[in-house]
Length: 315
Image (cartoon, rainbow, N blue to C red; front, side, top):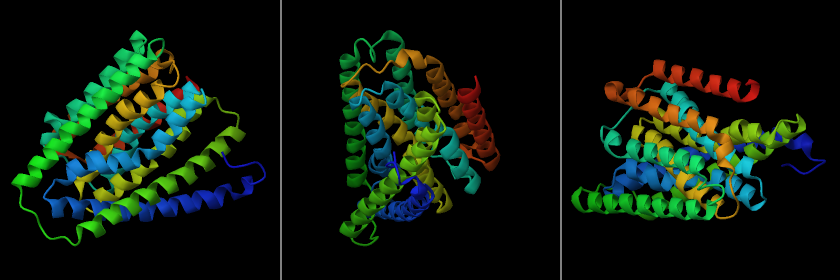
C-alpha cells in the first residue's frame, strides 16, 4: 500500500503504471513472437512458459508475500480471482479487440492441463490438503508444476529439432526485448496494485473481497495487456497461451509455494472455487465453437465476469 501521506500521488502512480504496462506488453509480444520464429518454436509454447511466468510475477509476489505475512485470505483470494479474471475478463476484452483464433491442439493438451489443475485445486481444498495438511499439498503442487514445465520444455526441444528456423533478428536482442517487456509489465502492475489497494483500503472493504476483485484484477492486468496486445497484433497463440499458462502457474506454482508457509484455509473458499471450475468448463464450448473466440462471445464473457463481481460484493 502507498505510504501514509503520499495518497495524493495515487492517480499519478496509476497513470505511470498504465504507461509501463502498455509499452512493456508491446515489447514483450514482439520479442516473444520473433524469438519463437527465430528458434523454430511455436509462440504458443513460448507464451505458455516464458510470457506466462512473467505475467504471473505480480500474483506470485502478492500471494506468497501474503502467505509469509499470514494473510491466507489474500493469498488464496488473489489466485482464485486472478484465474477467473484471466478467463473471462482478459480473453473477453482481447476477443472484442479482435476475434481470437484457437489452435486445435489447445484442446488436446493445454485446456485439459488447466482443467486438471483446477480440479486438483478444488479437491485439495475440499480434503484439507491446503489447510491441515498444507505442506503435503504444497509439495505435490510444486511437483506437478515441475512436471508441467518439463513436458513443455521437451515439446520445445522437439519443435526446435524438427521445424525450420527463420531469421527474425538477433536472438540476444529478442530475448532482451522479452526481459525488458516483462520488467515493464511487472513494474506497471505493481504500481497499479499499490494504488488500487490504497483506494480499496480507504473504503474499508473486507480483505477477501479486495483479493478476489481489485487485487485479482490488478495482478491480472499484465495478462490483460499482453493478451489484448497480442490479439490486436494477430498473435492468437500468445493471447490464449498466456492466459492458460498463467492459470496453471497461479494454481500449481504460486499456491504450491504459498502452502509451504501457512494453512491457506481454502476450504472456506469452496463457493468461489466452484465458480472457477464452472468458468473453466464454460471455456471449452466457447473455445471449441468454430475454433475462434468471437466478439459476441467476448461480450458474453464480460457479462459473466460482471455477475461474478456483483456476487462477491453483494451476496
